[in-house]
Length: 219
Image 1: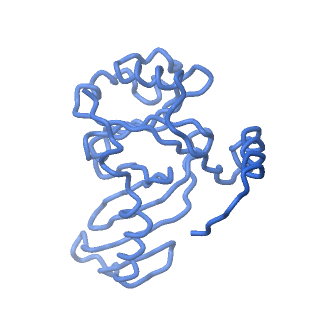
Image 2 (image 1 turned 180 degrees about the vertical axis):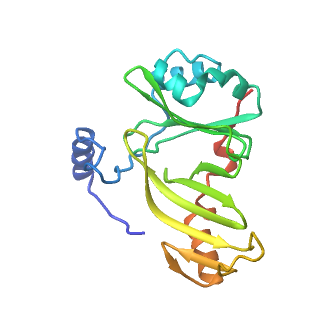
Image 3 (image 1 turned 90 degrees about the vertical axis):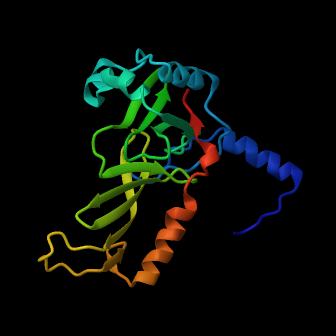
């Protein structure tokens, strides 16, 4: 990692300049990550009310589309949550999941202009899951018929996920008479050996997972 040394006046000038700049990035490109220390007081109040069961800050279309009428059912489970800036706008999203098990449930919620928006509310598909990395990248993991794929995505300001990297592994043939190569390893569309795959999975995903201490139990 490169290190830079600033004199105090120059540093203050840079901070003032950054304070006046937007952080959304160019259209269609990845947003520029912005360090944050937690959601704003208004956002935190909205998130906490939602975690207590209040869905009034969502519009009716979102409630219908994402099945938020069943939110009380989700809340009856063993959940944990954290805050993380996923789209680089300087505001932190609310991430909720089943305790240490995003495959059973995972959700992402965004606060903006006094409203809540749902970016993910997955309580059905146990073979897939979304979970965050330390830098705000979201991993979409899909397990199917002896294979496992990892798609690393960056969230856009509207909640869409833009793929930036992929890893794929096949460790079992299902059905057994399949002619697909097995074992098989792939990184960003290119076949690699097992050692390279494991190294890339560790570097890109497993070493970048949030610490368990980042998650707070929802009581």
